[in-house]
Length: 409
Ligand SMILES: Nc1nc2c(ncn2[C@@H]2O[C@H](COP(=O)(O)OP(=O)(O)OP(=O)(O)O)[C@@H](O)[C@H]2O)c(=O)[nH]1
Image: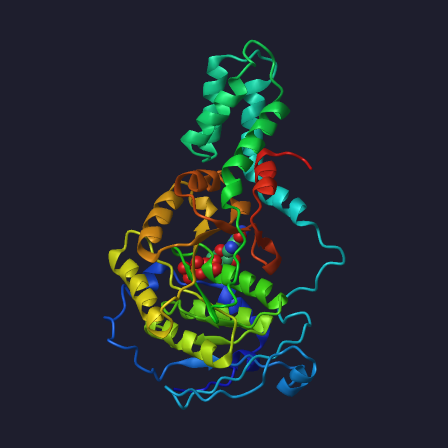
């Protein structure tokens, strides 16, 4: 066990940032699999609890400031060498972040813009179908095609076409009329699943495991969620469970540094389940509210990697039988239909409790969220429309429905 000085703090931040975000290993660079499950996770020399130093305040200043972050070194019983120095959390602009603009654009404006590729693609399809023609069967078929191409799913597309057809045959139908029907139907489908990620304070720490395929946005999403929880005054411990990629560990360190959250990590290639064990124990000892655990990206058809996820969950239960309390599947909206099989397999293997959909800003097929909700009936907690901490928001069915239908306000 080593306690490591935060070398992120001693390196020039700009170059570290560039190094982490400027280059990523490809999945091919990763080891195929990890070692067999230990009966009990062994204390590992490689465990590091990263202490992200502040240049501004010392721990005692914080306690005096009433931020409730006890400054202490925690001696861990199972690993007596370990030292955990809690993070210092001044509410100053985090390092490496550009200064906040004077006037922030509203989430609605950014959501509209983020979903513009999806809404423009649907909108131009609707204009091509509905302009200056009286409604007939072939137009409804074309409408279904447009909606299926936007990945809304066959069932939703058929329902919308049916609603549009009702009582409107042989008359001109305005594009705005169809958009309103589309928005209403999408909202109706999604409403039951738009649920915030709620932290049960009885479960302390509340353990959130974040899973998904390679590059879906897990680490970034963890950073964004941690930013929200920290802003709510919760004590968050980040666990760098993507032990396949050194860059992923560093990426999480940077988020920790920005947010002033401690990050627990092991060396690259270490056993992620042992890290999960250590993270929960450490959080219990520190009195943290939430553990956000990253995992390596894995394709859902890689059986051995999916088995490793099961192992992480089994090992978590050795520390807290009720953990993980939430399993978030991060889905990249740009993959379209493949997301359906991700939900199915990750759901089966890891017991996914909720979804986060990222990169809705990078696709014309944002409708996939509707197809997924319709089929799997899982809560959607957040959606992501960009790479910064502000680009993730709690999911609301009405806003999403109106944005994807291209309704202006
Ligand atoms: N445009 C856009 N990019 C995003 C969003 N969320 C994440 N990204 C970017 O997607 C890329 C991959 O994100 P990561 O967080 O590294 O993904 P990951 O799932 O942890 O990746 P692996 O560790 O390889 O499995 C990064 O360049 C992120 O900045 C989003 O909502 N919109």
